[in-house]
Image (cartoon, rainbow, N blue to C red; front, side, top):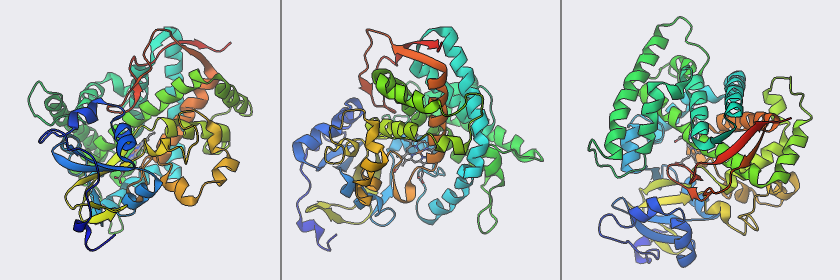
Length: 444
Ligand code: HEM
């Protein structure tokens, strides 16, 4: 950092059209960042959503941004996301309030709470496996969306079969507006999502009220949050709890759908990896319920899931606003601009990951991981972000992915159907264009 950054040049790159800049390309082109990094090197400027924006990539760049959180940079999601999440959402809070609320919310993701979620995750997974078996051939991605939404609704707010309820349907419309042009008209994606936000908040309010009136608030996330207190003994207000619950439902559903869909796709494409997962599973008797301990012992499955999140990270990067002029690699980063740290392109850096497009779970074997420096491990692999805003639900996500994967490989065989596009669509989170069409059968 320097005290005279304004004498330095701005990063290379084009602003694009007046006002909207390159926003349409950004939303429409899965390789938006990759193409520009190839042209300009590891830093470039553009204009997105009316704001000059700098993209920087690599482990060092990630460290620069994530360790400057709340001093040089503050979180700033696009306007559509901000309006739909609501200002009391943890993802938008900053400074001391953010730290205080994070501690409160974290109470729902402690190991004891997680252990209590396992049986429900197993039960819902099993129900869906049986359903897919009876379907035989299916378009898996929408089913996986329903699956993760059912798990999120049950474990977060105690709602059964959430995907089949009005809340589930409103939620899907709401999700579609999260990364959209923020025009609040009745026929725009954003306008429809905004209407759904109001209805969703009414439903969530009702659920919270019922819960507050019960003598035993329960052990799901909402039950824990209704009781959670900070050091001064304060609870969440009902108003804030609504926004926080909406955030958790979103975060716990959208990203996980992408992650489990990528697991299904990649293991169908790499049968030798699937064989090795199944060999490991033989050590765990099928009739023994899963536990945090047995899941921890599935070390090869762990490597596979890490590699899934490296190759297809559900979140491609994070937006921040620059609150203090600074410089990076000889370029000025002016106050008021946006910066984006990169997860997706960092995970494809061939210095960190040779042959980066190959699905190779052994990259995360203990010997190979030891050859990386601590910084490379921390900021060169960050599917869950990093620093003080690292994903709050990381362990919940890892738990659900592992339970899903272990039960799926034990129960079923699946093959990709021919004549489908596996090209990845990235908004809101990565998934194959034709939504993953498969033949699904119970293992003999
Ligand atoms: C934040 C990824 C699942 C709750 C984040 C961030 C990333 C991320 C990259 C940081 C964004 C930033 O730096 O601006 C993922 C992935 C998931 C996942 C890849 C699944 C595979 C979950 C789940 C929950 C959750 C299951 C909760 C049930 C949150 C919350 C934040 C967050 C509350 C905001 C944290 C803060 O701002 O302090 N997630 N997430 N996530 N995630 Fe996740």
